[in-house]
Length: 312
Image (tube, rainbow, N blue to C red; front, side):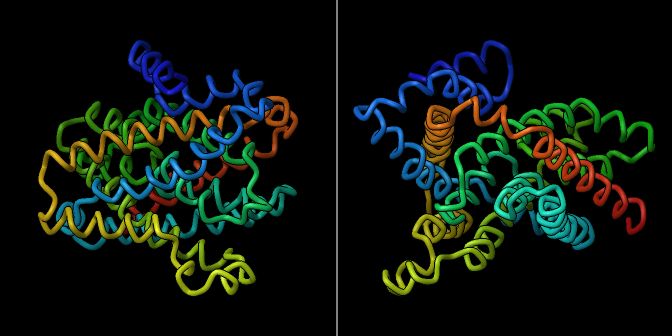
């Protein structure tokens, strides 16, 4: 019901559905205090989230990525890696956990809420707090919405061509919807290129999550469970779906069904995470997490712009 309400509100006010799902869930935190509801909420926040991330694989189109040439993708990939490292270093400097630095940096660098959801599933449970995820979702969604308005103006001030504006928009805005909105507000060409660049970032979600998993995996748990747990099943499913879809082995109507289910599962999982999270705990974290997310966003945008102006 929370997910349905969030979708209705998002449609009515033309705003990000993930943000509405999280905020509505936060208002219903009292439900998590009931043992009768807790098990189902936990299932949605973890198992359903993994299903949703696995299904994101059908959104990746390798042909669109290849068509861009080599320079824009290199600029984007280097900037993504640098932003995640920057996030970890700045988090430690601000007295925040390395986990929060990885989660926020990854969300900014890759694809916003979807990336945060994927990364959160492979971070250590004992260190990964629900409020950390909630803060990241709220932060990247808000900053992405602001970027949708500000970045086209930046492109105009710098007199970027439609092609370069598309690379900048697609390379620096967090969420897909905002990328599309900002790109096509400049021109159809800028919108197309922005979408392609954004797809490149989404395509890099799997290797980035795999690297994070290998760095933070619990060695003792892995030894107890055996080699089968070395690679999480949802990451394997993500890759298989992406590969099969690009080989044309999945019918178009099935792809549409999977994409719809993935979107609904993500909304459902984000709503559950909101219900699990105490708003009081979020408010108590202070200004540092907000500054961290903002600094990562500005740093990432500046790297993309520098690469465009220097190497294209």
